[in-house]
Length: 109
Ligand code: 5GP
Ligand code: ZN
Image 1 (cartoon, rainbow, N blue to C red):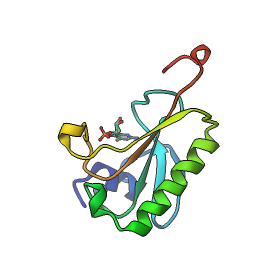
Image 2 (cartoon, rainbow, N blue to C red):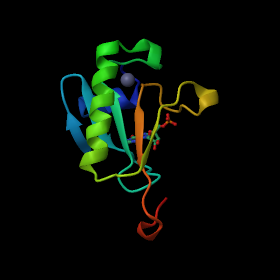
Image 3 (cartoon, rainbow, N blue to C red):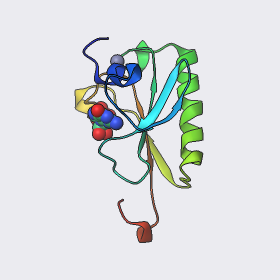
């Protein structure tokens, strides 16, 4: 979708710190991290809400989310997936946040 910021990231029109890419899925660092390693994992299929994404794509996104958590060394983390403005969704392209919860001594979160 031309106007979608995450579709532009998928196309490479907007730069990002990519962590993983397949034909169906992309993972990259959040531009405003809530903690070190805060990542976004998205299906390449454009859809605003979870119900817009085919099951096979969602399954891969979740599998990649798990691997990204391990790859950034997150032992404690939250997965967040917002749907709709009232639920604080700002970008209308389905995305899963993987937000590491560092030890207090590690700061930022
Ligand atoms: P939402 O509130 O929609 O669940 O979260 C959207 C997330 O996308 C936010 O955490 C925000 O920092 C991130 N974000 C928005 N624009 C960009 C961008 O251009 N690049 C990256 N890497 N992250 C973005
Ligand atoms: Zn999109």
